[in-house]
Length: 259
Image 1 (cartoon, one colour):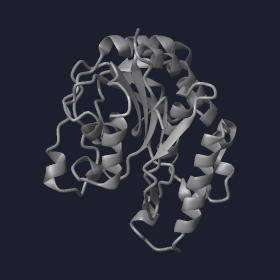
Image 2: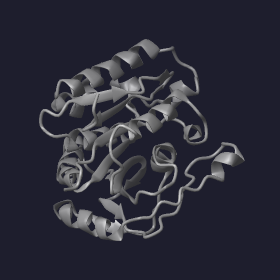
Image 3: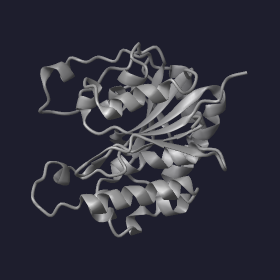
């Protein structure tokens, strides 16, 4: 019998976490030791936004360095994980009602490989990426996550990669007031709603009084919906990596991982 794989949401923060020993990267390494190695990974990264739902079907997905202004050491990183064309076709079939199609133009962006470089440094687990369809509302992304949930029973890890708090203007301190207390309040309230199974509150996060500042970038928040949707009814959440920077929270959430 295949071991049920977890569903994770990872706050990935800066790409530099890929090559640095940070509290967050140590947390990624530690969480990977808390459950058996999955047979494959489906990653929903904040950094692949499309018109329509797409899933990578490359047998050998390329490592995408989708950023600028970082040292050469970061651009030299390669994460040579295999793809899984059969799994990609299966996912496209499961998501047919959402118009999903396979795609060989993308690969693994830093929302995926910067995290997996620590979780599975040998790159020995096949990885496919699922895009964020920019045309769909929160509830549709959650529904896609629900359709992916049965893959956990087949040993496939569901990985949402973004940040609950993500405001690059605040991170780079480009003027404005220091609202770190408000950002932490937003992060705390989202975590508490998650722990309480209040998924509708998370889906309606834009109503939170601090959302406009703490989470102006929808693409970094929406991967959380996939993780929540893939969690089983009543399955407890494990929260880790509660690390903060102005404008960024590294908070991560796991379902199906022992406390």
